Length: 277
Ligand SMILES: NC(=O)C1=CN([C@@H]2O[C@H](COP(=O)(O)OP(=O)(O)OC[C@H]3O[C@@H](n4cnc5c(N)ncnc54)[C@H](OP(=O)(O)O)[C@@H]3O)[C@@H](O)[C@H]2O)C=CC1
Ligand SMILES: Nc1nc(=O)c2c([nH]1)NC[C@@H]1CN(c3ccc(C(=O)N[C@@H](CCC(=O)O)C(=O)O)cc3)C=[N+]21
Image 1 (cartoon, rainbow, N blue to C red):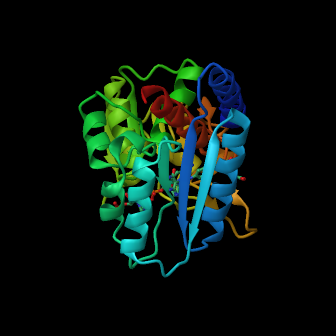
Image 2 (image 1 turned 90 degrees about the vertical axis):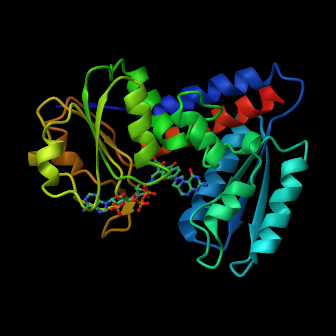
């Protein structure tokens, strides 16, 4: 039976360490979160981030904007936050309503406050192996691997998904950790041929039941990034957890795996931003 990779416990340890460090700073780090529209899932993430900030002794500034907010209004708020000294990090909750240009919005965030690490400057720095901030979800996965002494060097790593926020940077970080990486996506024929080879398998698609036990190598480390809702309305990942845990050596649960570590890495980035200032 696989070891369950406890992201929730690890995130709690991380928050306690950060809270401790914050007491040594001369000022409180601050996060501004912008939420446009009222997607229920996004609302939950935002309230979780507020609790995290409170626990760590960070200030948090929440900006809720109407779903029909114009791009000019959003950019004006970001411009104000870019120069506001109480704000060390700015996070614009994604996805944005369709009439807003995400690329434009992300580019308008000052790179030194871009704690999501989605700005092209930070993406470029990361891809050159000289990151200022690491993207929270992939960095959270790397932190889980490290905490459980799972060595990536020389391993066959397969990432399913190639989004800019998860799959692509995940592949990069695993490559930088000396894994041999294959990135699969919706145009990959015979997905199982790739997944069965993986020593480390990362699923980041958003489709319940995508990864079945017969697609996983005996003893593989299985990381499930996805956050889907099942028929009962509960969170679930891409991986058939019950069946795969009998095959894998290590597996992340959903919830309680990557999600909490994403939030913990966001706090790390805010602390980094505050210390750099
Ligand atoms: N735990 C956390 O902290 C976070 C969780 N998430 C969750 O992770 C999941 C992925 O998020 P995100 O990357 O933003 O999602 P996207 O929808 O942007 O990307 C999904 C990727 O999966 C690929 N894909 C779709 N169908 C298949 C298939 N049948 N076989 C193989 N690949 C497929 C797509 O391929 P193609 O490129 O060809 O379309 C795409 O690259 C979601 O469930 C999301 O909710 C996201 C962020 C943080
Ligand atoms: N600009 C931006 N940055 C993001 O990082 C970002 C985003 N937009 N949009 C949405 C996705 C998704 N995401 C999650 C964060 C935490 C959990 C999380 O904490 N999950 C808990 C469950 C939460 C609960 O049950 O309350 C868990 O898996 O255990 C999940 C998903 C960040 N995202």
